[in-house]
Length: 371
View 1 (cartoon, helix red, strand yellow):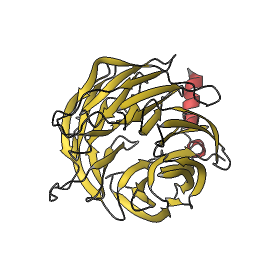
View 2 (spheres, one colour; view 1 turned 60 degrees about the vertical axis):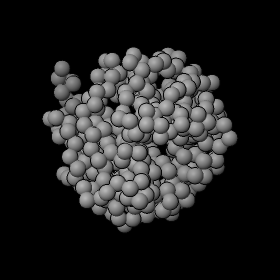
View 3 (tube, one colour; view 1 turned 135 degrees about the vertical axis):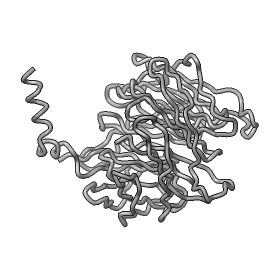
View 4 (tube, one colour; view 1 turned 180 degrees about the vertical axis):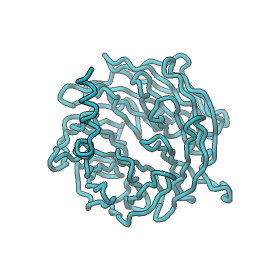
């Protein structure tokens, strides 16, 4: 027991903690064409010029393996594929390992499970999701499962299923696939040994008709989940039963300022701050802003804090680096990536003045740079 206390005390020493906190991150960008990377300095939020990482057709979303040695990307070209790369820790360059079928057309989002054994992808075009086992060398095996979604929205605003994202829960037991065309978040149980997904019981969480669920994010405590409605331009908070894989609707709140009348437009991304204090949602044209919400630490209820729009143009994706100090926003039509400092007390954003030109940036992901 004394040894345990000594170890904890040692890890809490300022020098040890600082040594474990990287000052720089390599940032990988999925875009309309090719994968790029740049460096972010988390002491000031400054970014370096973007460099080509790999040539690939429409790699809109990328995901990093938990060991940070491999990167996986969707490719929306042709019939759709998932591509595996090895990351060069020194240069950041990407070496092609292999690719596999996405199991459907138009793959637009993917995630690696927390054990680093399986890649899961959402196929927007065909309205399906797939899971692909990862080999020991980081390359991809053949798909372990493909699930074709069926049906359509009650309001009929979509002709059929359009799977838009897929995410894992904290316990690495259940995968959640938001289907915009069905107004549902389909829930699957993951077999950690085979990589196969099987429908949960119940198989889905129903969002309000016309909500258009797009992206999905868990609170760090694993007890609450957030879903942004692309069409409703709002955010739903859900309580989560981790044992059963069941979501329960708790609250819905608009992502627009009170004085703005909804006229078209859409949301895109939802991200929870690492501290668990704030939730952010991106509003695309014509609103072009990041909506900021505070989370009541006792009830989990959301309160609108404000909106950040300075320099923001079609923010299809944004991400917060692991230390929680900075947010990078991918301006898809603005052809740039912007850096914002995050106020740790209020959640509000302030431009750092650092901007990088990139054609059609869509996705932002981080890998720490170790000395």
